[in-house]
Length: 90
Image 1 (cartoon, rainbow, N blue to C red):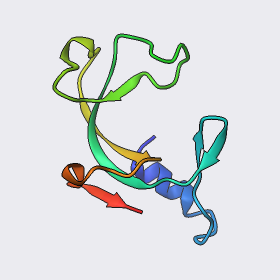
Image 2: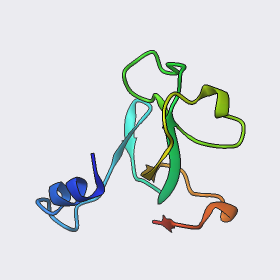
Image 3: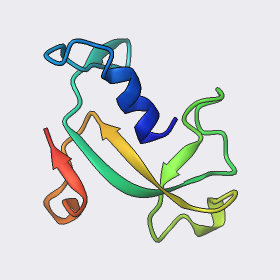
């Protein structure tokens, strides 16, 4: 999904409706939105067809399967102070 596709879908909804994301066995509100470099990994971490991409760090080069790319991340966690570039804390 692209950012523009998500915007098109959200524009069809009431603008004052809360946004919730799946979290464990329930749902919760996102805490931040940011841009990060991500890549598909060789290891299937979750055992399902979801969750097979990782936000990259300097220790993951041997686990990458394909090219890295920038992605918009909607996160249930707040971002650390040193990671606030390109970040919108909600």
